[in-house]
Length: 535
Image (cartoon, rainbow, N blue to C red):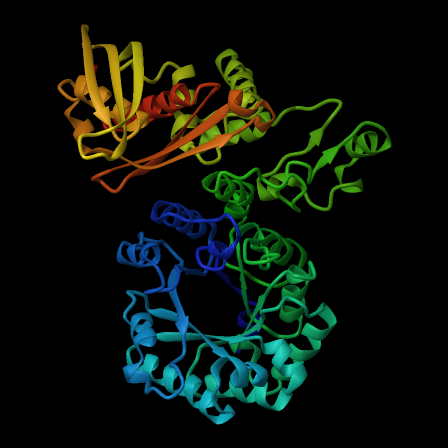
């Protein structure tokens, strides 16, 4: 293996499976698609889509895997069960039936678990590992073997744990991933164990999968790489059961900016790291972790005094990297420049080319409006369509496709003739479209559906393209919980059309219906603008 190849570390994201085990996290299919697309754009090598056959969401996702540019999807599952042949194991059949070229197969490597959890012999477990991997190879699959509880198993019985890893390697597994499943191993132990295993299995076939129960998952992953492993598994923002998994958002810049190892993340993609981190939080309706390394709002924040004066002279005094390398920004509390460069950079991404230091009255007003809106609760990390509309409206590039005069929504909760308790929503909308006044009334499954139906009824005769528009997802987040039922709410709507386009829009208001209408208005406008509809 050449020195260049020896330095290449491959990144494997398990957000869509391990992350889904986080308390309070429940990914929809649309969430999985959006996250996959962001990971692919970032340059992640492998994206684990989930566990085929485990639940309807994972099955639906594998049935409509989004196209990717460089990443490879993998499916997760188990080795065959004890007492069954690999060819006749239903779980293994579901795994091998997934429409992915790569499968990640988990197996036991701790003798204690073989005895207690599997209730089988040590030799049978070795056969289970080898048989399953051999069958997958015959089916044309590349296999990654997750050696579950490897570090606990190695400390208890190093001969047997190593035998399990070697069985997987000898059967043809591409990667043998050593898992710190309990998250209780420390970096010096990881470095020692991986180094010892690397004497039997080449580092070019060794990986690390670390959990964060001692807050050492990132350190353990880096220690494993130093000891020879060249495959690292983790999740965005460290999502995962209990205390989470190794945080790829910290690992990626640490590997790229602070070591000599090569990863598949370009400098340009690295500058989107903060966006990817916050996009996940927006999909989950979570507040971004303010103090998260590299990407947190406070990661490069300096408060008045000696630190500020030192940073203003030379940022290297209190900043370990230039914030823009990871898409973040310096924030000086007493003299904040409020991210103008970041906003201008986002303008360029959507095709509005503006010099960062150029003086333009419209641009300056737009920058101030973006800052003011984000202060009100708008978040554009997960609502790119709303951001682009805001920018293009300020520059006079978006027509007024329709004008809302008023809307009214009525909810009725009652017992129907069958004795069933039902809730009906009815929306009345008055709009001006094509120079004409229109009033429409529609019922729906909830107020947003009713509003959408009423709007479509009024607009579709003028804009037939709206027949090819549907809402994919709808999320509401409370921004001011201290205000109880009077809280400000943020609504995120994801939409799609028959051309494979997906886009997200946002609305904020003290009234959830008003916030919903604002997001819905942007969704419809974005569809019409992209389709070059004429007013």
